[in-house]
Length: 148
Image (tube, rainbow, N blue to C red; front, side, top):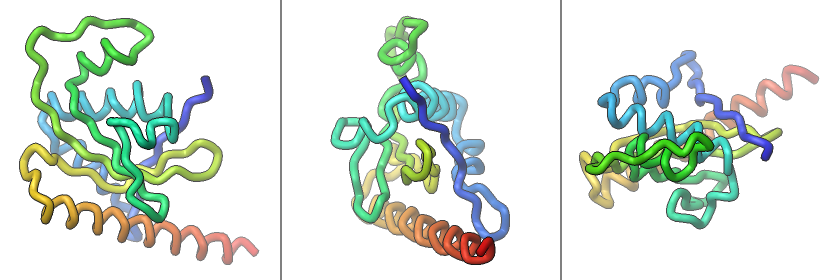
């Protein structure tokens, strides 16, 4: 199976918001997100659309939903077949992504929905992800113009 590669969105100041967000997560949440990206998102890519893992939000933006801890994800998806813990941690993370190029996944924005699962917060986070996707597209178009 051909895998996808993940890359962090980088803003005009060289900052990587998703990378910074992941570093602020607790160890259980960080491990769950990192494992989900590696074992699920990078392996299955766009095939996840329409499943419990991923929802299309329009304009090329997708919401990747992480609801399991790392041990459970490994037990379900890893080739190693690691066993799941008896009491899994409660995880409710969201990662907004865009698929492009030769199997590349752009990691745009993330948040911990478990801390605030309100519709208002969800809409705010989706708007931020759309904003970053638009900024990325503009920067990409400008870079292409400069190469001409």
